[in-house]
Amino acid sequence: MNRLVVVSNRVGTVKDAARAGGLAVALVEALSAAGGLWYGWSGETSEANDGRLRMVQDGDITLATLDLTDQDYEQYYNGFANRTLWPLFHYRIDLTSFDRRYYETYQQVNAQFAEGLVPLLQPNDLIWVHDYHFLAFGQELRRLKCTQPIGFFLHIPFPSREVFITLPRHDKLVEALFAYDVLGFQTDRDRRMFQDYVVRELGGEVWENKARAFGRTIEVRTFPIGIDTETFVQSADSPEAINQYTSMREMLKGRHQIIGVDRLDYTKGLPERFESFERLLEDHSDVHRKVSFMQIAPVSRTEVEEYVDIRHELEGASGRINGRFAEFDWTPLRYLNRSFSRHQLAGLYRASRIGLVTPLRDGMNLVAKEYVAAQDPEDPGVLILSRFAGAASQLRSALIVNPYDVKAVADAVHEALNMTLQERRDRHQTMMPDLLANNVNIWRDNFIEGMKSVERREAA
Image 1: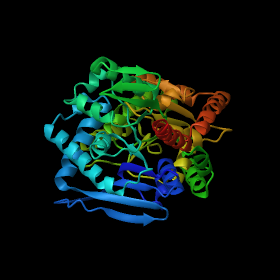
Image 2: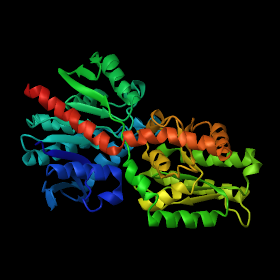
Image 3: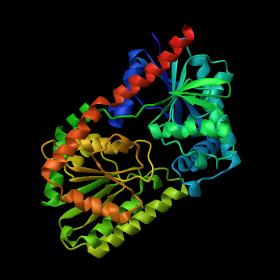
């Protein structure tokens, strides 16, 4: 039996997997099945890194982590990962920092982490690397003579060729990706963007689910990530969710609620979303006192200036909207910078007539799927979803909008508020089968099977 080795920037714990959500649960289940290894950053920094591994045995799973130096954290994590790759891959060239030091440290950290993993590997391992923090990780493993199948899954979008080539040494990063055996993308669009780059920039070849460049042929496939749908449906019926639903409905006093749940990030389209809600109140006086918008946005990456700026922008917009439209017994917009448990969120989703999910660009967006799964099938709410979220390719019965078109989003909200019960049921019933058939466990199993098929071909 193959042992699974998962490599990710952050390493969770088995006991916290359920709290973290479906992805962590799916990984833990796969790791437990064959006594797997979960490897990555410890979350700790120090002045100097001695390369010492922290090893913890948690049931059948081995957790192995490395610290980062303070400089590595600033230049690799805050720098190349979050000031270069994150904005660029989300089409924000204006926020992208092209700093050579960041790139060099990124390469060094990928090499250091590869060196730390190699002594822990076994001949029959399948190595599954996750996300933009480790684009160069597979190449570093190959330089260290690692021959095991290595897969890579990109959780965020892959940008168009015209955007990607603004990055200095973009070709070096793609060459590093060709060290993997399987490349996984969230959507067909992301896969096509990568293949377009291979053909038009590198002069490589693509056919079916293959790409060839730099003397290697690799699998390039779409693996749309899902949620643990059945478990999330059950969460909406849990006592904690029911209590949250009941208290929310009592507070609303018959008003319809719009809900947004996003990490505080400039890719999520929150300023545009607030502006759309303001436009709704301007254009449709019939909704005054009848609707309430709650935006949950836990803060993140507080060291990055752009995240501080967007928090201040949203605080100002929230105050302006409530100042213009609030009445003594009606606060139109509630803006919360705190987290809720998954059960609490399920209750809040079910209490909300509209789920407003309007990122400017997103790899998939699992909030959209969670909102649909949490609904009461007899009286479901309406999902309004950005066309630039990966989930839009699956949840076609949502109201699909352009988040940059403030009036169109406002009109979609008004349409959803007035949608008949039968139409709401029909849309919900159309989306649920896809959520059940393409859940997070199917996603995980399909990717692992993709790596195993590579191993079988090489053994033949």
